[in-house]
Image 1 (cartoon, rainbow, N blue to C red):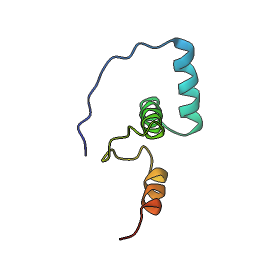
Image 2: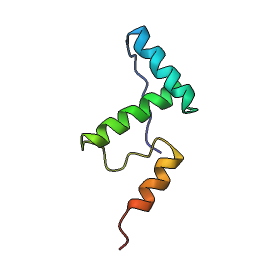
Image 3: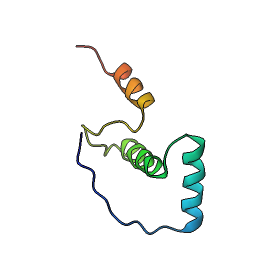
Image 4: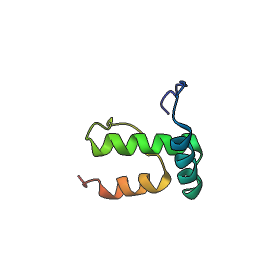
Length: 70
């Protein structure tokens, strides 16, 4: 598993509350939701690190199913 690093993030209260509600809807922790959003954003921008683990088990399954067979 990759090393995890802590850091302080200052964010607008309304934005944080909205992300917390979304995390609750998706049954994730706030930290898990923020990681999911960051990974998804990197993936969409095609800047996703090659060996970053998926944010959820569903993503792991989807990623495995979409890989070409050799």
